[in-house]
Length: 248
Image 1: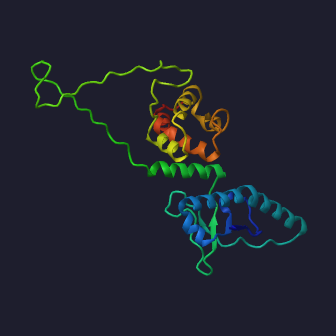
Image 2: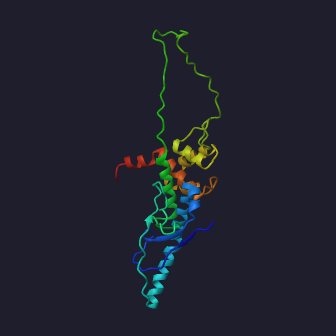
Image 3: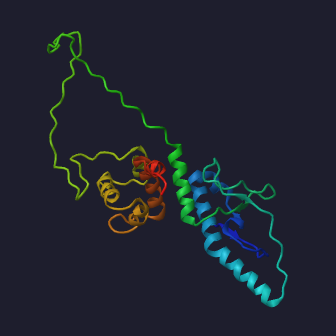
């Protein structure tokens, strides 16, 4: 399989990554077979190519044209932007040949696109179910031994190890929230990640969580760290807490 990425040299002032239109030759059969994950991988290639390679190249290209007194070509027609929140991540191929995709990069770094994917996944999750608790008690203060009424008896709880701040263990592994659980399932993490994540969120500022998840005992990839970071913020209400703080 081959994927070809191309950006033509052109003249522009104050060029930024979102101004770049990248031509990508994408195999149509693989695009259909790979689905959303394939489209996201191609989008990451395009964003990385635009930010890390094409943008520095165009700045050097314009500098050489200025030194040599050559008039650079006009910018090409703008492509359609990458849409991490849409049903199709990369634009459809041009109708002339069915393989050429002309798309425009998004603002920011490639890791920012990964965060956009994570946010899109979080918003696609169903809202957590409300837990309804039913308490059955007798009206006369007795033990309610009526055989027609189901009896609810508490099972004896076997006490595990004591809660400690050192390792985040709470006797049982208790979920942080539905979004964090979804990320753990998506990347096939073990449930033992949850105590480590509790320690991380209790001992470090939220602005450092993503950075720390890429090193040390976690060693997450950029995508894994960015996705888990967004999930932790959503489950722990970090953005809501910031919004409720009074202005300085």
